[in-house]
Image (cartoon, rainbow, N blue to C red):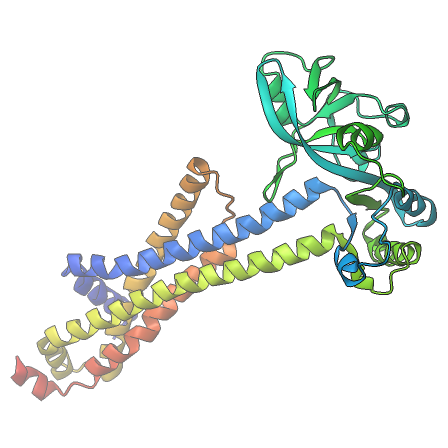
Length: 405
């Protein structure tokens, strides 16, 4: 029998039971829409993470010291991370271009009737380059601010908008820990990195944070929470990690290398990529399961169709149709059901993804690979789950089929 005739008969059989065919396709449609949507969300999360790390700054490394070294040897003097360490790193590690020591604290920041509890970062002018910030207004901290412990402050875009919604922040006095600070600059918007809002930073000179905000002095010097560093390029990140780790171990007489907590942007990005890839695979697997459920529905309906159309099969065989003709017709019906349901599901998935990303600010990324996967899986399911019912129909004895009618 000609393939065109087989297609016409398959389409006619499906149209004769429009409601049943539509309900059968619904399971495949939902499954395909789920595949498109789930994969789009997973890949969107991966791209968003990569973009956030790029905004953090290229080739950035972060250094801190583990508190475990203190617990292991309570009787020994365990020096904290110091400004002297940052200065030594800047001087002795040639693979770095900028080094920014950081002190982190939290204080009330007040302007007129507006009061916010906010994190305060004490740092140096190098911070702007290491963390890849841009200025939208004014200037950043300079060496004179640090040297003389000046009460100046640079605000992130969000905190500046909250404090000064209708006013230019530059030159305005804000109070931090009941001391007046002059706003000298505002950073350009940068967005969030995971749960950290990079536009909500309040930045003051390192020495000001140490002596005036933190309010205590250490016998060792200026204690740091973190040292952020910028490597020359991607090729020197590994070398910089090795050099910084060895230098800090020597300066602090640390025998255990795990006491030095050093991590890079690349390592964080790799970890985030693995997590997001695992999430995408899990979401895709859940969506494929829904496709399999839809495939079982297709097989069930095709078995019912074979039972209902026993007389038709017997009559066609009596008129000369071969088993291959019968097999091809029922198999084609199953493939048409799943493929059409798959195409509709792709449209629903793409449309739903676009709507969800617009209304709920979801990070999504629709890929051609996920569409090809959805269509391929749909057709494959139709072929797989249609084989058994088609064989059942093809094996019917024409005499028995006609008598059963």
